[in-house]
Length: 218
Image (cartoon, rainbow, N blue to C red):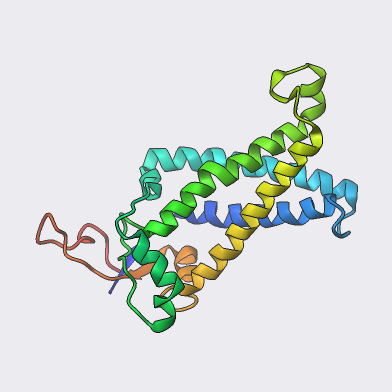
């Protein structure tokens, strides 16, 4: 095993900030829906709107970071070991079987994670963002007779936004559970806090050097 600096500073900041904003948006969003009373309706609406703008800014920076660093490649799905990965999470992990894929600096996500996170970024997040913006500006959009919402009732927009919220909450809950499936129940969380993770060193197929030969050891 070798300790590798796998999660960069911005990556960790983006991850935890996004998690905090998502849970805060869920909290205020459910209060706006009347599920409970904590901040008060008016304050919940204002807080929800402010947090939504913060999340949009964070998303913009994260998109820029992913493309300028090449980290977007982490989300390219592969199906070569997808079946084995699904079997591992449903059966193998409970029998103490070895993990079917090896995590590395260049492949931080296993096939199932890559496919799931890609769905989050291309389906769930856009659904929540687009419906949220349409809902926020519905009156001004409708007043100007913009075609995009001319035939879409506000209750449909609200339903789709709530659906997106439930999907992301389900994703978050599963994600939290999956963090406990590392070498120890807290190893993945610790890695996302410190940036360092103990990874199995594998020979590089293209040379006799280690895959991590260019990574500083600590």
